Image 1 (tube, helix red, strand yellow):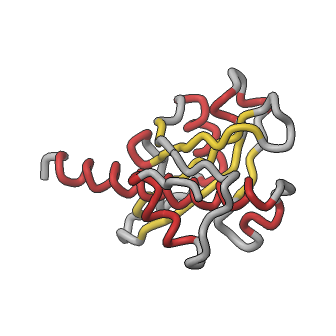
Image 2: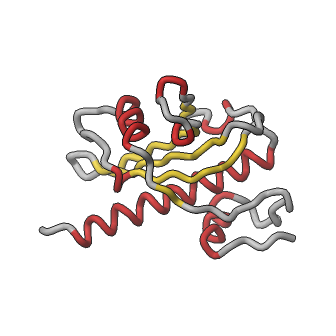
Length: 154
């Protein structure tokens, strides 16, 4: 049985049934800010007039590590942002963008709409880890947004 760190423990209960996690799944996640180049690329995907441009404090990323190719690192990137009517918009992507210099070669897979993780061809343990990371990144993005709301002048 593996130990789930306190940071990912709540995420595990949101995404999975009560069965224990396989030992191969490492759930020690850390949220990271996304580089400006990745933020710009993300904005091209979700640019909508009612949302506007995402800022770095509305986006969180969690590194998953290698997918099927051991030399490529993948990240879950999540954005939580309100539109002009204060409805929360949630966007989640699986990408290799934060780990490379140029956004031209990056790959982005939307994982929160429709098929979700069905389009990702990874072993089940990596998919489960990715889903846990997605939930953790969503929590980080929500906490960043809440912090901004509490600290911004009214």
